[in-house]
Image (cartoon, rainbow, N blue to C red; front, side, top):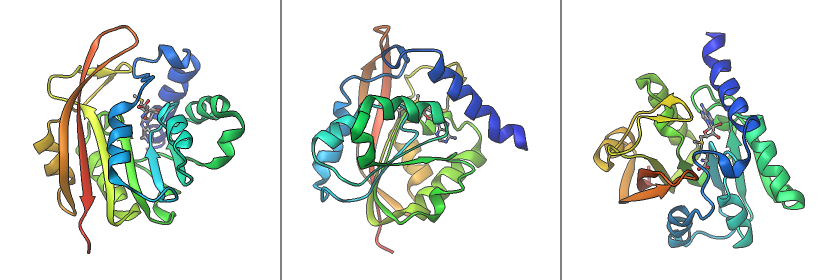
Amino acid sequence: MKEEITAPKEHWNRAYLGRKTEELGWYEEDPQPSLDLIEGLGLAKDARQLHVGVGASTLIDHLLEKGYTSLIATDISAEALKRLQSRLGSQQDKVEWVIDDLVHARTLPHMEPVQLWHDRAVLHFFVEESDRASYVQLMKKVIAPGGFAIIATFSMEGAHLCSGLPVHRYDAPALEELIGDEFRMVKSFDYTFKNPRDEDRPYVYTLFQRVNN
Ligand SMILES: C[S@@+](CC[C@H](N)C(=O)[O-])C[C@H]1O[C@@H](n2cnc3c(N)ncnc32)[C@H](O)[C@@H]1O
């Protein structure tokens, strides 16, 4: 039981310690699809946004630049968050930081509800059905009624491995089936990301809204 909890944390800490941020296979200099989706929501600048499995994502830099003031950055890996904090420098004080495991969450379930949940390249690592169920339970706990979720995963045409780990690939209907119970799918599109080795990594992007209940 203990190993289930610690093994992914060690994997991810090693992944970040072993490489420069720009050399990570998922490094995205220009997170345009996520930015466009977030900007399109027209949320208040102080709306609470939870960025799950945020890693060292440049999205946070861009959102701070655009004036968003309630960003919460969470990851299982303390090393990932340290990397992002050191890049942000003094701007890091404008972000709330939470180290937690999305499938064995301890802190996140107790937080104030958020208006936006954003996940790029995290859900696809949950290859066990029970882990996916825990992820969706957490979404239901922390996303406010009427709030949004942006989820981007490897698509059915995508790679079978990411960071050396097996992934569960999706298309929009499969994501809708997983998340759809208390959430309505608003939009979905395919997007091919070019990784730092110039290889194509096809993703599916989805936007959900929590139905008011
Ligand atoms: C492929 S990286 C993507 C990072 C970031 N979202 C991006 O787009 O650059 C996956 C991230 O998910 C985090 N992660 C993996 N399993 C997790 C879990 N169970 N709970 C929270 N974070 C997790 C990893 O530490 C890593 O930062």
